[in-house]
Length: 257
Image (cartoon, rainbow, N blue to C red):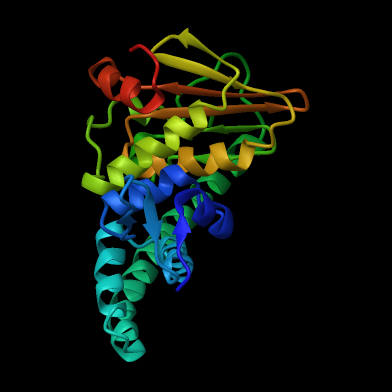
């Protein structure tokens, strides 16, 4: 019977050892112990990790993945499929809703663009010049928008958003760990108004990772404001939060609040 030490499993699966420990604590990846206390994983651990990674790519919560793993342990694929179907259907509904919101926002932007393309009034801006759109026509904030050089919020709604996180338990622990790992790659951190600026080494190729994590965090904690500055020689992430969220800011980013 093949067994793996944690370093061997991390190398074989491509999953960091810190994540393997987290999965064990979350009840997703069982591990035995040697007499000297080292973790030992069974030969099915690699396949189990592949299933976990696949489920996470579908946007499933850790609790849902844990339930699927329990069903999977019974050895009946039909049962796993029966449990996955409603979960995937729910994610489709959520995704369609987000697509509808983005389409509405795109239509709103098109209207503003058309208004701004017309003749400008003489003199200063006024209520009908098109530079300011009525708040009643807004479709709600899109948390993160991406351009070739910058990620930033479409609005400053983070300042008015309630300081609350939709994650809990194991998911919150995993997200905190993800931020700590990313912050550990930063070359420097400086304090700015309402938050911090993290600077990453040039050529570190972290833009995609930073953008994805920022977008995920904005989805559960709308009170955070993320701005990513990307140039050929530098990558900087600015994160801001209301004063009442200073403690959460420190917990996530591992820097003094």
